[in-house]
Amino acid sequence: MQFSRIAFFCCCALILFTGIFYYPKWNKPHSEATISWDVSGYYMYLPATFIYKDLKKCVFKDSIFAKYQPTPDFQQAFLHSSGNYVMKYPAGQALMMLPFFTVAHLYAKFSASYPADGFSYPYQLAISLGMMLMAMIGIWFLRKILLHYFSDTATAITLLIVVFATNYLNYASIDTGMTHNSLFTLYCLLMWSTIQFYKKPSLTKASLIGCLVGLATLTRPTELISILIPLLWGIDSIAAMQQRVSFFLKQFKYVLAAGICMFAFVFIQLLYWKYSSGEWIVYSYQEQGFSWLRPHLYKGMFSSNNGWLTYTPVMILFFIGLPFLYKKQQQLFWVVASFSALFIYICFAWDIWWYGGSLGMRAMIQAYPVLAISIGGLLDVLLKNKMYLKISTGFFLLLCAYYNFWLTGQAHLGGLYRAGEMTDAYLKAILFQYKVDDNVQLLLDRTEQFKGAPASSTEIYSNNFDSESDEHATALYAIAGKSLFMNKEKQSTPEYFFTVPKKKDHFIRISATFRTERKEWNTWRMAQFIVKFYKGDSTVKYNMVRVFRVLNDNETKHVYFDAKLPGEFDRVSVYCWNAESDRPLLIDDLKVFLFEP
Image 1 (cartoon, helix red, strand yellow):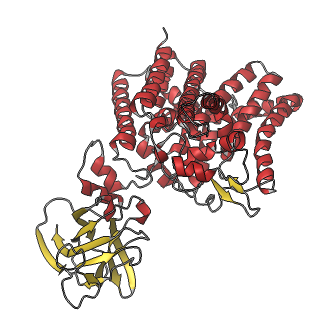
Image 2 (image 1 turned 90 degrees about the vertical axis):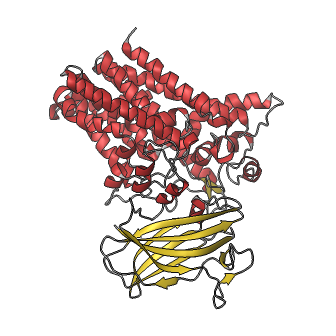
Image 3 (image 1 turned 180 degrees about the horizontal axis):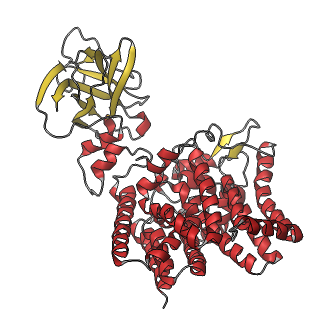
């Protein structure tokens, strides 16, 4: 049996094991279910159209949200000036989910066990398994594409890299309902259809290419750039480009067929917008948009908050492989390099460049089939090279695979990976760990960490709030004596000012004791423990931690954090802010220490 076929089955086995046995998302409740968060937004077209017949008003949402709670509120659509709701996300993903939704709906309708409401267990299961099937189809066609240009061994290793060593594993097996998984497969089908078209052109193949580009665009409008793949595939010179233009001019019927099919899919979205809002074009992402002149390239690549190469380091092989692809396979180099450069630019021009609750840079995943061409070309060369290069590459790939498994585990059952909140200090503290001290979570906030034992430590401020003149403290439910108190009505404590000796490279450690009856789970509403450095009336620096990261129901806990002294300041203050939360919080025994490194 071919090595690449064995690799394909290993990839499928890993996807199925991860999605069915390790973390069966369809069994999870509320916002952790398969149809939750963004997925529920892509999916919402289906129950609204086929079950409730209410695409405009979405009246059904209240009962669904009360029962299933896929998101904290109705984020899947926005209220248009017409008085109707307009879905935030395009309809392409819903179209690809339609077969699996249909199977689930028929089962629920004729079963007495589950309500046919679009969100019960059969729907969650069908979408999860159906999109896993979609992933395996994509891997099969990626194998066929790679075998067309590279050796069986290079193809096999490339498949294993994509599934075992990148964040594609998470989106192919657990978060399957996200668009990146299905777009990955669409790109594989598009590349294979393009190869077949140029072997023997036909109207059927041209129409299929148009349908795939149209469906990708209907899923995510920026995927319109997928049109570069059939246009540039196989071109390795100016002469080849001229021949391609001449071919399309002479055989314009292929362009026409592809264009009609592509527009037919895009027209689905235009019709929906016209039906729901009365307008042919609606920008449904509202305040979100692109910074075309200032793309976030460095952060998008290397940030600890979802940087692409930070969380998928194996993709450095794509960049290393480009020169080899240019030397050995120029007919592939230009389409891969042109498409990838434009894709990366668009991906990181998006203002929310970290893409929210994401495991690594999820927006890059659909480009992996194209990027895999460069990796396959590099491996073809490495496999013919010296043994020490093969061994060192093998160790690197094993480390990347382990890192990916660790990340996937910590994003779900482990819980150490915090999507959209990661910082350099926190990532370093948890890297390859499986259990850490609770206080490590505070590194997710705007704080610093004094490492090691200080040469000296001096207490420079202390306040137990027991003074009768402190009108902001209360004896009611106090931790000891009197304590500061915050709740829904009282959102902030006073700022307590003190002086700090100006010493280079010194730190201060701010500590206090906190008590609460009820934990605040919403990160952005967690009470903040803040230190500010002032120069005159201007803030030159501030550090803070969210105390509810480590404070649980009916718990009293000592919380501390560090701040390095800035170069210029003349006074310092400490206070707490409840961040619009309604959770009651008591604060006592405030202390500040000066640490000499």
